[in-house]
Image 1 (cartoon, rainbow, N blue to C red):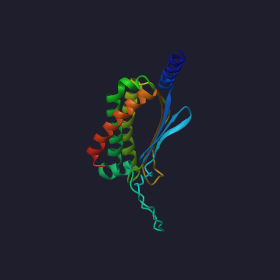
Image 2 (image 1 turned 120 degrees about the vertical axis):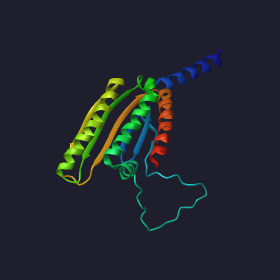
Image 3 (image 1 turned 135 degrees about the horizontal axis):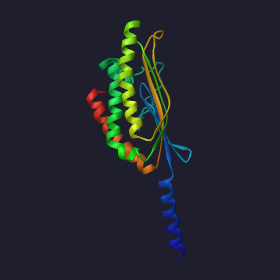
Length: 201
């Protein structure tokens, strides 16, 4: 009888762990940054600067500074221009939405922030590019808002007449059960591979 209580307790614990929500913080600042927390503990984190060290490989000390590699958005901008890079990122987001909509409807997307500064070659071009970017971004945000359980915190798209370079940053918090999050992550990774191949990243 005691064994049944133990087994029942273990099953109940597992079920509880699968039901308890897990949160993920996603930031995009030229590249993707992800931090996943479960029961307040960081269980997964990835940044573009992290490199895997090969086993049996000895670290060598060197005074030579490590050359910083271009992030995803910088590569896209060089290939497609700033507007084209924004369109590619939004296209990727829509592809993920289409493949994971069934799961996304059951989760919460909160604290969505978008900070986009548009800078052209001169004031006139900046104004033209700003209008074009707004025509691309706002319809996509509207589609997301109409189809998902989202809550925008700050959407800031400005014409950078006084800035030197265009910028595109965004962040959001995802709250879901572990099973749902794993399904979404699996499908998102699949879409990201297609996105990478398409853009030769």
